[in-house]
Length: 293
Image (tube, rainbow, N blue to C red; front, side, top):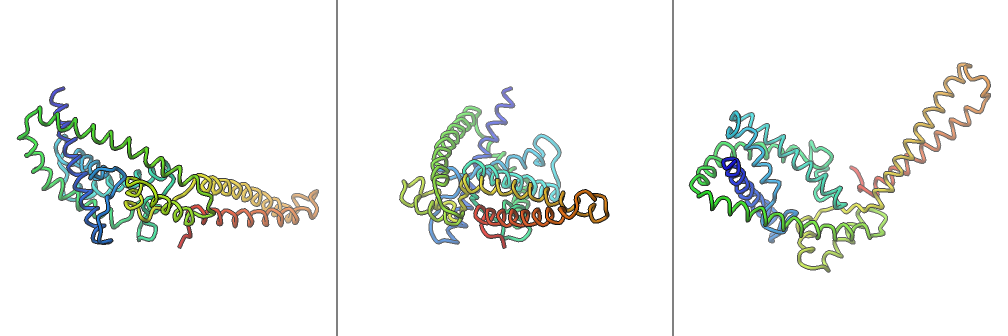
């Protein structure tokens, strides 16, 4: 039990170190892009947990600590898949939870639903090789020199810090979600612009969210509900049109003689209804998700 607790504490520290390193990388890249400091990430503190989770899971999977040590190719593929899955899930969770697409790779080549793209996946794979093959041995060797008490206290402080930060950050993001859902704009672009303006007038912590995700696309509950309703309406109209088309086909071969010429009218009406529903869905989809290129 003591050995397991010690290993957990070691991985908590490793998680935190890589989360901080990921934050530093994000901040540096944004400084190069915008020439100013931007506190990146969902949490307030100087860490991005997605990098910590990625490093820990890849290390546990192919790092050789608890199982077989992966080859360079295996580590690369593991990092690509694991970190890509983490980024995809984080994007999905934050969009469902807080009603906004916080980053979007839709214009990047070889992307999946705009949540991940091949360029990042290749970097994840390469980074995983560097971490597992060169960085991990140094960090774990360094942690071996720590006393058990120091390791346990450090891990406990990290856990308490992250719990507190997550609570505060979820409350702040909940406030942003309420701001998004309270907008009456007719499109996601209009709502996003209004939300950014409103966040500018808020406190420093809410302004930080605006700066951390300058390209976030707000998607209110109302726009999403309208899109879902239009989608259901289009599916119903499509089913009715297909049924009318099948009846028309049978009538044309004399299988529905009792229908007379009514099948032609029903087919025309069903076709017009389907076209109208499809056009409405396209409009609602554009309102909710923006124009698709």
